[in-house]
Image (cartoon, rainbow, N blue to C red; front, side, top):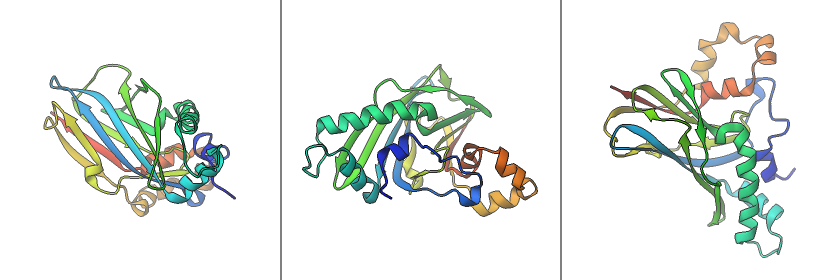
Length: 215
């Protein structure tokens, strides 16, 4: 069955009943830059996703209306509109916690889409809903809560802090080990657990994240 863009953004039927059966169908290399101000606040979270060639090819098949094997500006605009609207439900795959409490974000402009060297690219910036000081422990993860799309930060340098307060916090990229996560939660991994736990809970445990320790 051909992979379609709507499989990524609508995610119909992707809330799988068990972690063991959950696996991604779409793959992308990701980059995150957390922009900071000189007065010690997070101002933007900039994201770039470069999708695998198989998925990118399927998008061309779906959206290449003039059949020239490319995506022109009007075709890219349609993809942008669809992705921007659909990913809003999932907070654009951005998860931020400050001292253990979730922080909200907003998207000031549409997700931009491009097609380069046979791969689909999406890039956008989100901003905190309210002032977000670099204070205490801040964790940022970028992941699909349905576990249908895998966003891979290949190098630790793909999750960076930039701007006026770059050196204000200690930075650590955390890459959870699935075997360790399972071992640590063995007592609760029952059939009932999988029936009542959404895939977003599981994906959050497994997602690569950037942790900032700000004094």
